[in-house]
Length: 510
Image (tube, rainbow, N blue to C red; front, side):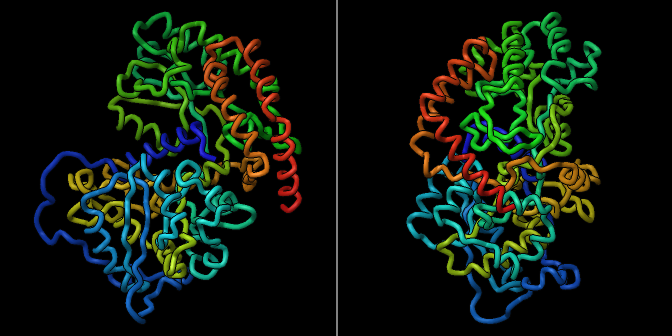
């Protein structure tokens, strides 16, 4: 289910990856002399592994053209890049590829229409926040991929952490290939390093919301014109539950259990709400935070602390993007959720006339560095130049003519390092992914169909109560009981009963 909290999370991580993978180039001018078009690697350099055997050139018949819908601002050089790429894919698997980019604001509205129209296409980006993966899988928009993965996608299965494929299951079946990137989600407290240094503040002991207080108090007393704790109406304290649906207050404790709970009735959440209210009354947050739809504190630099979701080396990327030093410390442990696994995926359309070829291409995209780097970075000598065996520098054309969302395009761990990336970047990603535990609801996807009318009403209640309660704007001892009463009056008990029934059935099959 597409919800603002997780959309905010994904877009935050998208920013991290876009900075690191696609948007580092700047300036203007040409690409220098010599042949501007990179030549495909020699056969011995790109020889597929045994696991990737289906990638070998078929050599029979006319090549198949694959249509790939992708989220992102349309780019001037997209056709140019894919014409060059298709020379290689034609030789390898007898396909050519055409990418169609739909702008960020249009993708989630246009793709369902395209899918419902029956228009034949082959591959489409899908996720938990755009062209919703779970909903469209159940509607029949995507092909079930279990057998195709076994036959033609073994390289994908070898590359992915097992939790990716487990979290991608909808009613026990896989309908899209998750992007091999950061696997878990983890909250961090971020800090403006300039203010930490100015007042010699130590963040090594900070983890809980309550442990922030001495630092916030110091900045409030000594700095003027600073938002001490920054954010907008969508900020929340740490929620120690795996939520069934982000729009509803129903979840399983992160420590596990058998029964779903209304998180608003738990002592953990009441303590968090009371702390947020204390911070609001102390003036740490903007007075109108419950109605703010966005915050530009990263641009102004007039802030001290906030909460964000992280990825490996995120501090470096945030700092480079903002133009001043940002540091962070963990606020909780990394966990693998359904929504973190399904944050970036590529599905094969149910209307595809070439599903085998589509899977062969997805396997190439996730295993062949030449394919993945051209899709992500463009053409060597035009959009980037090599400055090492596995390191590149983006040229001006990368931002002027071919800046695509790297996090959405397949296995990021076989992409080139950029100029300022540390040598161990992808090792850090592997370490981060392997450090995570699975959240208790990983693999469970609730079907809202039996209670969709109640859920529609409950979402309106959530929109009414969550911003003031979560931001600490109101006294939780008064507002939370009112919220609970209104949730119950609009059918929460019936929805929870259906959620529990489906969860019990799913759990019995594990």
